[in-house]
Image (cartoon, rainbow, N blue to C red; front, side):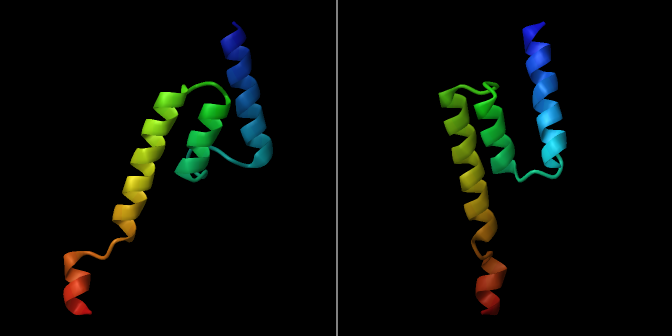
Length: 69
């Protein structure tokens, strides 16, 4: 029962801020879930590392882009 109440209040807070899971940047969603206690330290760090690796890969030029330069 307490967990449902916390989840409802978290949803209300996101609504007030104009954020939801589909519009918030992934790292902000991750931070929110950690702050709300949905993720423990290890899970937060693992998911953060994965997000940062993905961002680095997205920013790295592809082989085709390198050839075109």
